[in-house]
Image 1: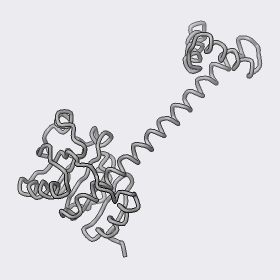
Image 2: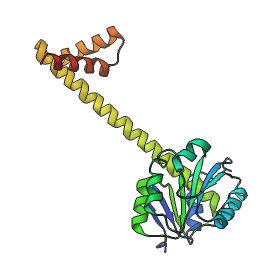
Image 3: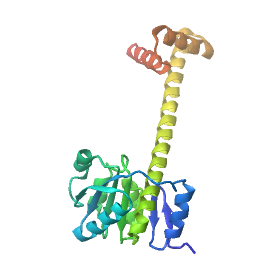
Image 4: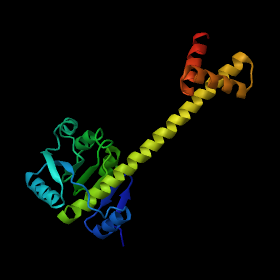
Length: 225
């Protein structure tokens, strides 16, 4: 029944026949309240289509902060304009455009409207950080829910990235402390608990984090080798 609908995390890919599912998903994400007005950076190769998109955005309560061509310096324009979201409307995204988006997709929600459902293009768009990839689905009544879902998915992805970074940092810090503890055990011929307490006492005395003390111990031990 929903063969024309496919979710590719972190990308939302939709065909023009998936509006009902999109609206249900919007409700499930608790976005039935009116969203704030957004400043949109519109990337479009066609002035005619850009005008239609801009009109649809105005009807949805948003404003186009700027309209640029696909091969303009996207990073520079984003830094200059500081939009809330980027909408890219292209017949078929080329590799250069997708590569230019790689440095943007981690910072802002990216919504791409296209007529190209090629799987390789979808994979490249996902790698570039596109939040929503919509095939043949540009219509005024769908602009708002699509943007809302894209922003929600972007925020969810950012939260997951933050949790992953936090977990990775905690693991690296634990490894650092374990290594320093082993060096103290070897140098003092003491138990694991005694080595840990020695590091902890040094951290408290010097008002430092355990990882900072561990790094200092490791550096000092390496200099004596």
